Image 1 (cartoon, rainbow, N blue to C red):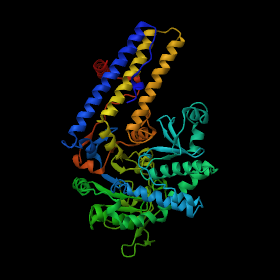
Image 2: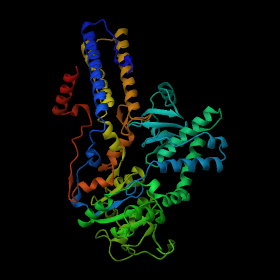
Image 3: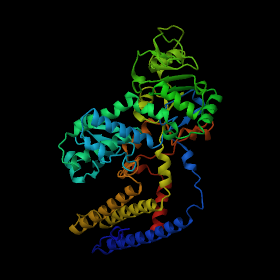
Image 4: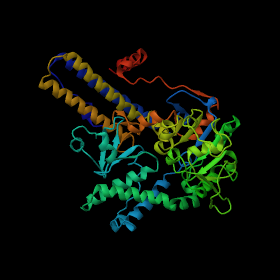
Length: 532
């Protein structure tokens, strides 16, 4: 640990100096204890098994009564089926090859050792199409961290680029910022950064907007062509993680009388191979309706796209009019309005084929939809129709593990002590105008806080830090997760620990500083009394 991180500036004001000296002493004691704990932990590693209990929790952002849920819908990719890191390696390699072969990017890129790097990408980032920067946004859309290729963008460059405020106006944001929100997009993020870095290293002039467009198109074509689907379906053991508890979850829900609906954007032949691998040959018997190639999020917003049935013998599409979704059969395309009509979800739907479906009949908190992609699976379901939604966020498991890391804990406590020192010394100085010495000390403390936050980011194992925090503020991904997901969990398997009539109660969330409860204030005082 750099000793500069444990060294605070001094001040001629005696009471302020006492605050600074006391904080410095506490910092050093904290890190001596942290080092001792780390050495002790290293000696005992392997002697105890982690319980993994935190990975099995379903977290709630709002009140949910599963007993009132009649219909449960599931996405497929990264929800029912979870993938190993090798899948992102495959998508990255295929997209890179498309860039070179189809888009005539430099042939040298194939020989440059470019590979997907799981230590660079996280979910919930965004790309600025104008600059090619990979950005981590706060919940207010402020750019907290940005990388140009594999080089971190300085604060000065960010302020200059974003008109002195590290953020764009809403109209500019819609034009320039492309969210990278789902787990597949981690390959996009890495390939954009690597391509930009390759151009810079080889002094190749490039237009960032064109490069980002080409890379996103190459990734999209890799998905749409079915190339990676074919490779994965032939090598399921290599690319797919076992999900031993999935069958139990589905049986529990079915046993409670809930109807299960399978809605995936993937083609049937790909879905069929994966579900047979994780569930068994008769997997379709668990579902009241199976819909593939659904085209979410258009599935929610289209109003007149009919369902087509998939022929089980030829896997071709029939064009007969679908008036009812039958169990054991497979359908493709369609839209939510048609789904409600052909499944007779409510009293608004009678046997007449041309019955007009009212807006209210599309809505209802009695439907729970579970998926991994916020904007493909969950946003329209929640925002437009008021469905109960659950997000599958495997990052929760990793970050819960990290919460017990000695280095991360000591970094967080160091930041808390330094911020407390900043508040205390300003209280001591009072409302008078600040001297040059005052400003110098406060600037020095703020720089120390920033360095500790850099250390905190590094300990998370990637250049951006927590998926849920953009530096010291909630990330835009965390904000969207809270806004559009009633529940979230690291895996669908977590549901096996809950009754189909379980009621979820959210923690008491306080949005504004003045709303902090007496309990929270007392907890803060207790912590500071321990470390100071």
